[in-house]
Image (tube, rainbow, N blue to C red; front, side):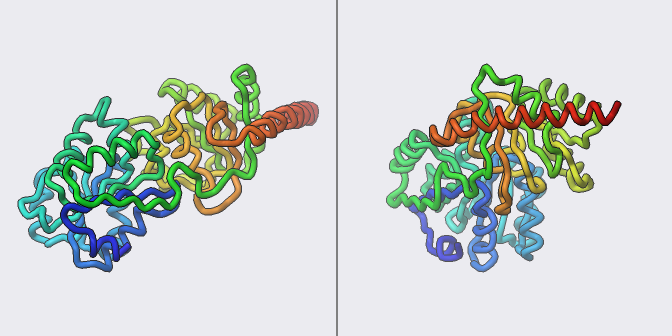
Length: 334
């Protein structure tokens, strides 16, 4: 990535897409370390800022993680080559002509900036309106978002490049897919609670109340559980650092971006995810290190029809196996 960092100029915009878990962020960190350029790395999540900051320190990069206004004084004092911030803590630099901007997880700048976090859109427009050299990173930019981005960039940029290493694709496919049509939702609930517990299972719930309810039920049956919902990512990361041998992580989609999870053996979706971009981010939490994992889903997106039919067959075989195991356990327990 050093070639990209050192050669991008004013009036250059680069869109870089690669699968979840491909290592985009950290490959660009390595390029920053080897270059002499100053880079502002903007993340839509504070948890991402903090994780990348630690990685930058380990790489011995001269970095400042902006949390408050006073931290900008450190940028001047340390002559930092890397500034990390969220859109909310971003402030323009007086010498921005000598700065490269990287906007990570850029699809969120659209999804969230158009709805409940206007600051994401403001920062994106502020940077691009001056034609500063900018790099957009994402694993999941839909065709619609790509067209929109190219259209908006063409107003201010002479050169727009797209390096596609695998947009809207998984780095590692699941070893087994279990597909539950809507009327078999109860099979999914049953399987989650009574199937194999070897390794950590990641469970995605739609609402905070569902996370709390399911976490309580799993703990009551003796499982070791960590949960996470919006606004709790920092505390979750701290708890995760001291937790070992988890049976379940139960969360909303907040953990689909930027939280460094342990190896995940199974991913369960307790609701039908309609947005493909978010679905792939969530699926991508399994198999990040190449390990085999299972997916249990209510969604018919991404996978081929043949794989879905096989997935339906698997749920009936699995249900029979679970019932047999439960019966044997009950007889033994009595």
